[in-house]
Image (tube, rainbow, N blue to C red; front, side, top):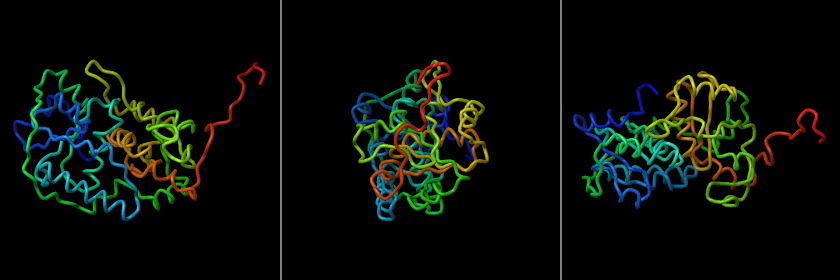
Length: 294
């Protein structure tokens, strides 16, 4: 990332006083109604939307979110600031909002580091009032779409040993015990995209007094090194629908990994095509510990 994306509650509080800001709350409507940042707009579709990367699916996603973001008051002049409850409780939904906005080419996007929990812990004001923003014409810049890869490009990545395919799902999905966070059999197949390596998305974060936050650059790069990723390694991320992988994308880019993209269709799309190869079962061959009979 060429400029800082993660901002603290104190930094956001100062920005609100001096800049044109559109606050986007990605949480469920009940959590939003119970209390949110003043004037924040609730867009839970950022989290719930299931995308496909066919040309038709991409066009539908683009049109849908351009309309939603325009209705929220984004014209290209305002800075969009996206937040969730906390960095590890919403499956990366604020980062998914960042990825969607960057995919559409929106020029100014920030993420509230620590989310609503960090804002409230800092003693900053909250509200239960629902704003009525003036709709704007949302600008789409197709040249910025390179943050996402479609199914064809994911197939090419699978065939290219120089590209790391990074699975960020929870461990039960990685070991092919479950097909999704929505239930073990939500998708027709359980497994992994061939050749993938695994870093569970939680490993990008650590506890702090104000809630979970991203690890430092050095700590994230140390995690990456365990699966062969350096700052110059090309990486394509996936999870179930692109939310947890969005969280990891932000972490890797903030840590200086230069070439990071996201397969937004992720396992939800890949697993539903029986013609696509998958790896199943445990991702390693079990063996007895030394001195223990097999």
